[in-house]
Image (cartoon, rainbow, N blue to C red):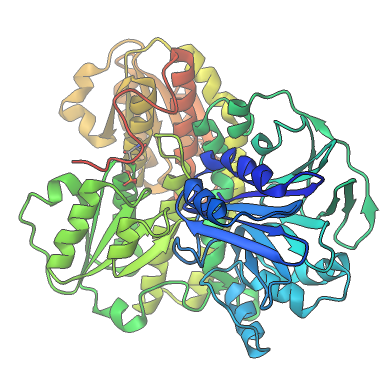
Length: 612
Ligand code: AGP
């Protein structure tokens, strides 16, 4: 996520802004900038790269002034570059803003502003904001914000500086956090608590649509209609490390709890409400046009680890919805197999980091064969994003824990959207069917929240099973893939040897490993296969296995056959891999917690495997 800081007071702003930004570096970023009022102008300094790059530019041309805003950018719209870095200003630099989030309707706003003569410099969604403020400016920033903010769709945390009212900053938020603090020498704004802790432990949390007027002598709060409101400060006794995790014990747990937002934030920029109040894809949201969509003869997906599991789910979805023969390849195998890639293949790579060496090599192999390539990735401007013909981003925000969680569910959301888009363009899905499908997708965020909030179920089971040395995950069809991902989570962070198996395969060998007390998690969400799963569960039970079944809310036939039932909210079978992932991740997390392993940095592993 991006980092925001702001300061107005009696001390020089630049060092305070830079120190604040350094406290937010853990959030991940690819460029940074500040804007400081020097008594006559809002001076903007910004640079692609790390804070040291920005510091160098400031050192070369220092900026004096006691009020300013700063930003570390995690690129979403527009790849990392000086010009796309924040702050962004209106045409004559009278207003400067920094932003965290995604303005989902920025194209429409940008077109309208250009029609009114606004000149844009960057590729970002953010730059519409200073131009909107300037266009509707009444002389009162508060009044102007009350008018402008409802025009913005999506998520935003904004800090705003203006030449008109130079020692006053404004800030507001919707779905992206902002905190504020007061010190004996001024007032501060930040995206997150770590940036305030060296000045104050009493912080004000902005609520959605609140507007704060931040002056050296103090902070005033207003609701979205301009009514002044009082706020109680929250006392924070976290240390900086705990604050970087938002109070969660580990980044992995924080990122699991961010999954409902990641699911929403990945889908929302792709869809809009169309005719008859039905959901549809936004114009140009999906990169493959109708002609090219119909030219695709087959799809090859290549990835590693958790991203490979997304590819396995995607294969089912592309074949079921779009009718396109699809194969999935582990990237490290694909590149050494002298693969046959037919003309008119679409080659898809999936990579959270966009820098996995094996996946990049597979992508280059495909490009050498002259086929169209598409990347699904979480990092704007990453190698796969730059080298593929098409790219669709996940908006999970930086994923810091080695174990991939929110990126996994976000990648699946992109794959589900792409499959539906191809299905419609190839005449396999009607607009009405698409609307129903997108409606179901749009419900997944809230359903994910239910599962995240039920974490005690997994914590309790982990306490019971903390000493086991091995376990099984079994399932059929899409559930067999969910088993692979859940097993990887358990293995990679709790170090419990876990086999993931198509349930029908157990009797062909590994059933010999099941003995009294063996933990077997049976994922059984595919309605038509429940009876088959019950047979497989019986095979395990008669041999002494302890069975935990992952089933949908409405499932009733399995309860009497197993030892525990973990329920997921009702949803079409096709979408269960997204929801089932969450209890699987939570179980892996709490097992690791019970076993005292290094959860965010498991032994022998790296977050991005940039070497073979
Ligand atoms: C997932 O929990 C693992 N950390 C790992 O398998 C990861 O998914 C794999 O290394 C691929 O990484 P990428 O998505 O960044 O390419």
